[in-house]
Length: 203
Image: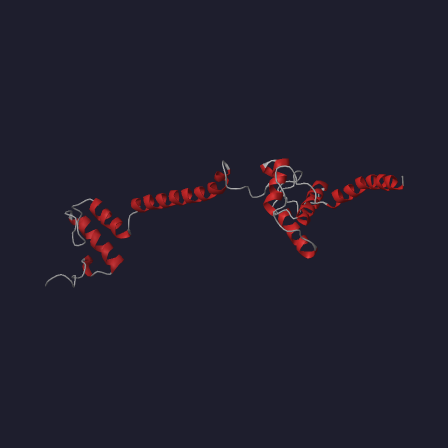
């Protein structure tokens, strides 16, 4: 009878022991991200990694602020959850995937290079290169249309009317010729209104 009582007490003691063992066991993995792949963090390292990972997550209630920078209550809750997962040993990508499953890809401040997101990464670069090509083409076209000063002078000479009288020519009318001479004498100081001989001309 005594042995039976001890056996009964032993059986009654088993469930609490099993419960204690379950409480000591590691927590179950979160859905969709599996078991922790990193090592548990603590102390200053945990604080630094929490800030780093929080800076990669967008606050759902703020405009363009990260979880690390946002003062919103939801952002503080998300930051606490990031800290909890880092302390449990989850790595950065697992945590980002966890929040992406809850809030969508929008929650990532830096969307991964996949699918349509390639346009987000390549679009600005393609736009910059396209703009540079357009500017280069416009400058090249403008350079072709521009005329150098020498060419402009040649064009002006070529387009000027021919058959103009030289500076030595006087009108056929005697009175008009005398008036032209007086004007030349007053304007240029030419004696008798006749220009001095050109030194470059052959004698």
